[in-house]
Image 1 (cartoon, rainbow, N blue to C red):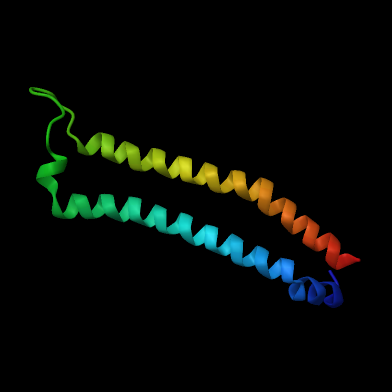
Image 2: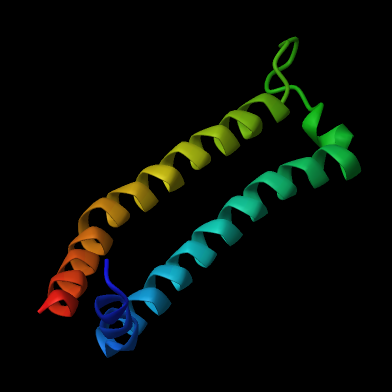
Length: 103
């Protein structure tokens, strides 16, 4: 890509809006991921008795197992949401901005 095309793309107001929107979405998704992971780790560190609570009388499984599984499933879902939006909306907008800059 030539320097002139690069400059036109960087100066395009649509590009600046696109970058801001993409970065905001990434930050929100990252914060959600951090809350899920660190929340679970903090729960392990500071409330072991709660996590050790059995799901049923005489049962073997504690409440920590489904919560941990929930964190893993949450990670999969949030990744799917990000990839879906990146592959559709973000890719389409980026391609349009690049085409516009190459004119």
